[in-house]
Image (cartoon, rainbow over all chains, first blue to last red; front, side, top):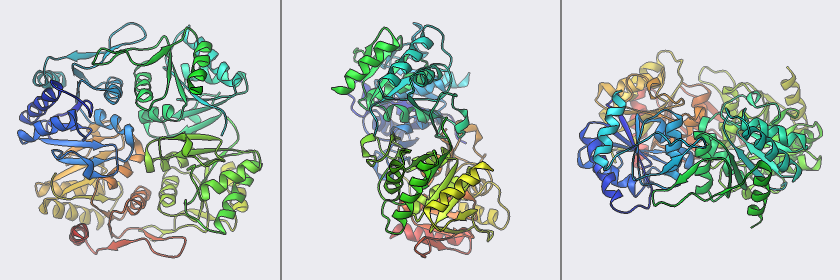
Length: 158
Length: 158
Length: 158
Length: 158
């Protein structure tokens, strides 16, 4: 097995500065010798994979559909699940830590599964979640993609 | 096909007044001739199924495990998915509307999938969610299980 | 919980006499007060659901897609899994016994999962399977849909 | 994206000469610069991953459970699906070609999904399948793990 695996989650339709944070996170993951795992599509996912590729890193794209060719061009290994949105569970389940950047409802489901599964989460401009008892969800926050990866790597060491 | 199908989501470990709301929701679903769908286990799920059974209603329990016998005793039809937490997607996907009562991270994933899939959601003492752009998630709120079902039925008609 | 649940598996594109066997199986399941579970689409699945409906029985259609409306018109409860072919596992996992009528490669995957999960299988004109050690798969054979249900009910009792 | 991805399927409990064929297949995949994908557990899966590792190849283990640590020690990237036997679909869906070595009912489900999805299959001492119309399943046969990989690579080129 390689070093740690870090998930980067975020939407397909995303604007700056979040695409920049995603690419920066990918670069930091690649530089650290960690493996990036994500949903394999466009937006935050593609930016993160491109960043990892810039540093010679490996990125695994866990796709919703049945066609490995639907992955963005920076994905090293495409996992074509064919199980639709249920693939969100697999992304966080396979990660040692999860970074959520911006994000829509798919990302929200990934945050939910990550806490359920005990994976540490770092958010960059992501959801604010207050549980029914009034407590915030255990999401660490970072000001940038680079710092999010540094924080994730520390959380994995613990 | 029968009348509408309404999902009731909530945790396995839940206290009053939420168990009462869940049972009341189940009763209202049964009385309306609708079908209840839920995760089939204990807590909010069991209370809702018991309520439906009190009114002669049908409840479908979509279980995470491989043993149909792990359903609570009030489930009419057990669906033993064997796919773990990924079954959360199936519950809301099969419903015309979703009611979230209290709830932990499994329920949060169901709310996320429900919005993603365009299913209307009514919450009773559930999560407060603010998306990265600062907007609240589209969760209608009801003060009781009975009123949640009335609201869900209206939202389905639209 | 109701009486036993029996899966009827078979292809979407199927000819006589197999559609007749499927309808007959559905009728026998409905008459026995058992619940039919199937893939919810056309062909063998639709014929079986129609048969169950003729006897006032309940049929559950476990669909591959995300739209409950894609079920055949005789399905009582549509489960819209959204997980594609992986839903084949759920059909047999939720059944006490499995009847395979004719069938293509989807049916073959259901037979494989059924044996793996220890569910008894009755075949009507279905696959012939010889394992790598030279032994046939444990598929009971019946000459008709009606006799397949009688055999399945006996196997469940054991 | 890297070169082609080849799945090696087979049981956890397997004897010689099949473990030798699996290791040989893994070596040939690694030597060809292809990526191995498999179920990530023991038996045929572990032997294939060990073979790939001997040639510096990459192997992806698509696990049924939720713990990436349950992968055999030769897996490069563990995908912890948490969806049980349904992960069999993902293995073949992510592959350009499938090699089945010996095998039990899990392997049979993978062969079924592979044909359904149009992936070419090469068998080494695996199942004999006759469909309901009397035709054999389209499984190419090879006498060894090494020749199976050569055949799979040719089938992918077409």
